[in-house]
Length: 115
Length: 114
View 1 (cartoon, rainbow over the protein chains, first blue to last red):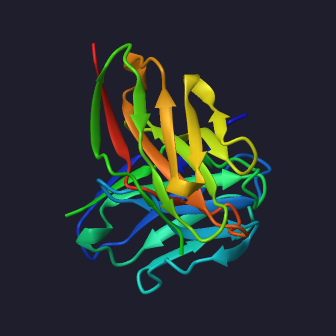
View 2: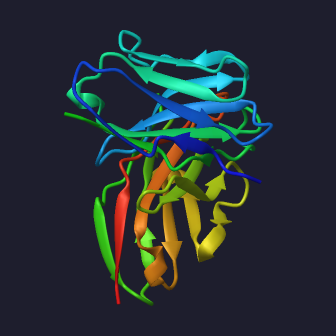
């Protein structure tokens, strides 16, 4: 099966600009997660979707970050405006269901550099 | 809230030597525990997981981990390291009813000397 697809792989923007990342999960996977991985740290969950609904966005900085999964398939994560501290790798993961018995599959990530 | 500590930021071992990566968790109930590996520029790949039952779990690529409730630990081991094992390793914990959401440690960077 095809893996989790993310684009772009790299993005460099100036602070206060906006940026968007795209994720296409494995076909049939109901759950989709966005993680932020800052250099030297482990991934931190930003938001979890179940089909096209948000399950948990408690750690999403909603004043600047937004995410959607309108048709319950692919998803977009947006940052507007970006800050220097947003420099990180943004990882998308998907799972067949919202259960620890359902392994998470991670994409290769988008590396964002904010200058 | 649950948390994970990986005390070792960097570890260097010689090829063929044994490996143990440490992981300590904090969670009030029986946790769901995972080890993931991340190669440069790649996403995370699941090595193994522990939910319940036998406290010694086997994973892919010859890795194993042992759950020790008394020590709140879930250390990852491999008897003989290969150069291709050089990567970053993350321990993660999930909470009961957590919907497959994971809390990751800060990772251990493994270097293998030939």
